[in-house]
Image 1 (cartoon, rainbow, N blue to C red):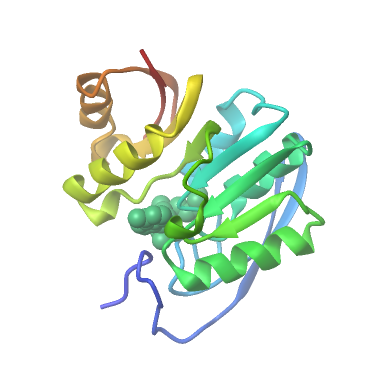
Image 2: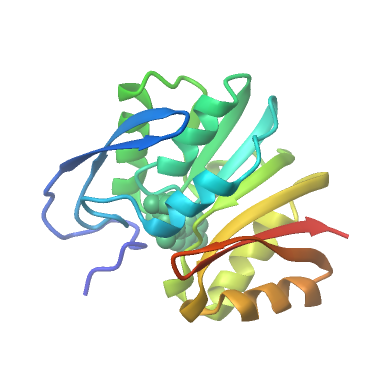
Length: 197
Ligand SMILES: C[S@@+](CC[C@H](N)C(=O)[O-])C[C@H]1O[C@@H](n2cnc3c(N)ncnc32)[C@H](O)[C@@H]1O
């Protein structure tokens, strides 16, 4: 069985372009089978991008689980003076994200697998539509790994479907010592904002 979080999807490629508009401009993104969001941009991702505050203008920003790159590319366009790390375990996603950044003329996106991000990097923010489907223990491990790398005072914005556990994730974030609130709600999703206490 193929999952969108496979390291090397075996399913045959079937690229589809998606052109989509945000108030701050249009992006053309190639999507593919074996990568989250084939032929569309996820409603949760759209909510995150419509509701998040302006990302920091400089420093290192992270799109955790970049997929085809809708989040990373939007951050890169909003903060041309920052470096946006677009991280994914899925090699097909990384290839698409890099090609999509080039196609949209965004030169400040660095696509990487998780272990290729420099260990001493401190993150000014994290935006993510996280891979809930990997299961709770793996998701918690993933979030602990990356949220722990944020600069003091930085916040992460995570979009999660309500029926896939947004509220319990918010409680877990608080148990881990974060300030976690609901930044936005819509279309069955919650955008959680988490910052170090
Ligand atoms: C829900 S998708 C979101 C994709 C994209 N950001 C979007 O909004 O369309 C989550 C992504 O996380 C990736 N992922 C899964 N496990 C991961 C891990 N351990 N580290 C980084 N990315 C991971 C998946 O491959 C997938 O592309």
